Length: 156
Image (cartoon, rainbow, N blue to C red; front, side, top):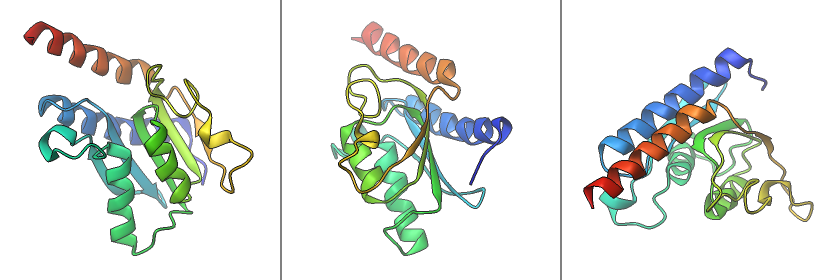
């Protein structure tokens, strides 16, 4: 599945809406959507604070939602759109679920597992490879994160 720039930005805008919801709920503002056949099959955002579960990352939640809705752990024909570069854990989930395409917004220099700290999705030792499309609406994604942490520091 290939996406033109308009479609790519449209799906990333949906992920940004999820990130804004996370921001409004006091969660680190990361949103994700999973797309199959140009249809969103799962959308969610970080829920660590409200759930009390350390692994409640947006990427992991949409993967699990898609697994349930499709009745399959393999997401071979899907694309993941996420506002911030996935961490190591989420990269593992992307590989394990066989997602072939990842689009993400801003890099994460502290936790990024795609290109900032590690290159897990490009590791030649893996049995699954992911096409990676970085910097999709990166400025909007980065601004939301910066606003969140600025607000958090101000309120402390």
